[in-house]
Image (cartoon, rainbow, N blue to C red; front, side):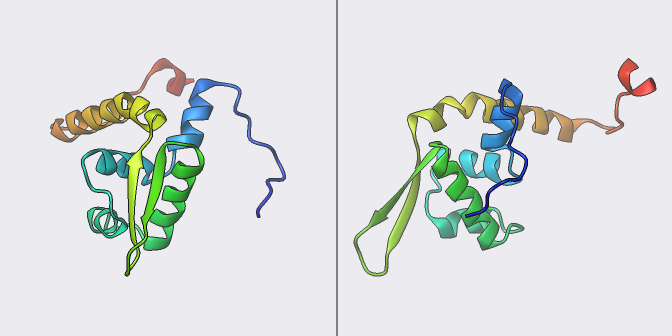
Length: 121
């Protein structure tokens, strides 16, 4: 297994949440699983621009962090479903806020960045 040469600095809340849900597709996966899409094929169809490998990797990372659980049913062909854990349910307000902000941003007539005082320095 890969071992990082420089350890991650996870001593603040923002770094921790970015470690857990900071992947490109992780918030979408959490949102989709919460919406009732639990099979890998459904998640692949909903996130068609993501490769199957990337989705599987990000699902595995969410499972390792305890956000989702993976259930394999003993049938042929094998059936796999993903469910949110209690920890995963606790992150839904964050995902919901991200979704709301993104929807509001889409509705903006002009999408010009706002320059604040820090950017002028």
